[in-house]
Image 1 (cartoon, one colour):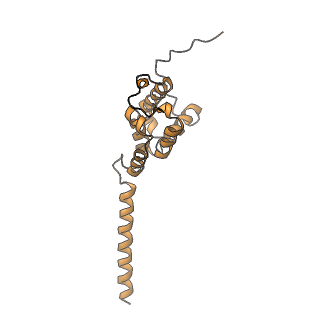
Image 2 (cartoon, one colour):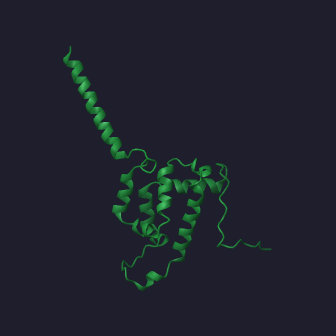
Image 3 (cartoon, helix red, strand yellow):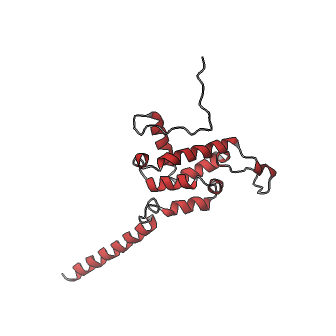
Length: 164
């Protein structure tokens, strides 16, 4: 006897937030990987149809009106993931919550999913740094602070040697 399947148009319930739940750990690993802009680039290049990226390259193509069902399903899956990973119950398990949730939020936008194949978009995301969304400092600002700190240490070292 076949068991009735739930309708696919109803959203699934998120898995229980325990590390012993295989579905939870699989989805945790996937959403965590979305924090890496170069992984997003890999998805765009390897699976462009999932992100709604046309292979024709013609913006005025008549097939633009027809949306790939795989792209629709993937967009729905991303919306499902974002709907519960942004809650504190689940976000506490994210290693880089700011970057992960930023990527999930951006992936909700059709234009972003199409544009993610462009190297400039990836470099822009990579340049933002992990802490940019959380109000922290970016990697570039951190590097500037390190250089300033090294300059001050050298000055102190020069002052100490001149006194002897």
